[in-house]
Image (cartoon, rainbow, N blue to C red; front, top):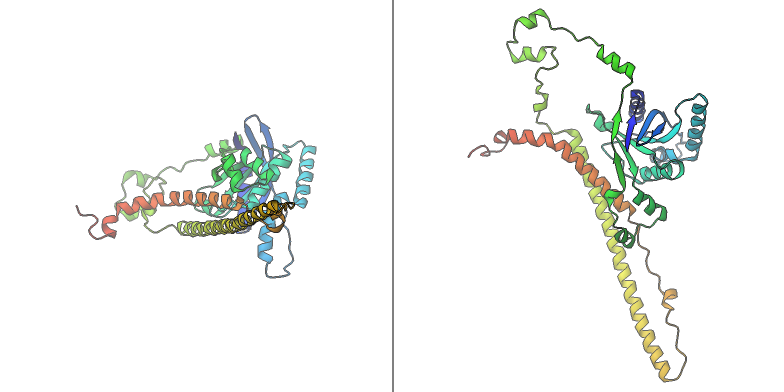
Length: 357
């Protein structure tokens, strides 16, 4: 299946809304048409802002959480239903195709995103998608916009609410199976395409045609867009690489915390099971003695009332965090591709003796 943004205005509206609310999460809903294997999105509408009274010091966190959970809130659901109703009255594409959200350096794999998309696929339409616009990466000059959908396997597991070790082993479910990324295509309208092709190209001056630039300085001042650009040879580390690495380390620490919690549960479970085994052996010996004395045996299932096994913590957070670590790792790999090549090119000047031999 392909997700198609049929009008460039949809992209501009998403970019504008996400940029204006950054770093707060921006959300909105998408409308369009569903044609066979293509989901055509023809318009996007932001959800209304929620005003929260600053009653305590948790105002910012509450506002961020409510903004992230906006797509499944009752007020926004009513707003979306009313808006679609009005669009149908004026004969405009009004099929609910999903929602969009903003992200910062790929930090979008969280429980709010999962619950929002689950709400859309379960309650509204199973073919709905979530479009994620990364504001930070787009600020570098390259548009970052991706489309996701929850996999059918994850939808079934999330509906049952069982994310225990046993259930994950039986279903062979992995963190890579949570989200399905769909190809995203952006189309310009015919009017805009005609306008772009009709833009005049500035002709070079007679002086530029007659002589070549005498120096590198004059070459860098020429208006020719195809002139060499030496900015790509800059050896400074991309600041986004540093921030992404910090986020990656935080996610790894979170993973270790979740792992320690699961190991603590396993130790508690082993202690309780040892107590139960010792109690059962003692009860069996008591019943054997009572049988020799021709007395009625004692019940052997009282351990269920005397002992309480610890409840296994859910593995959903661990799965989401593992998927987020993979997302950060891919971004680091993409950022370091260009830097590593330049470092190898000048390693003779960076490391003494590296260029010898």
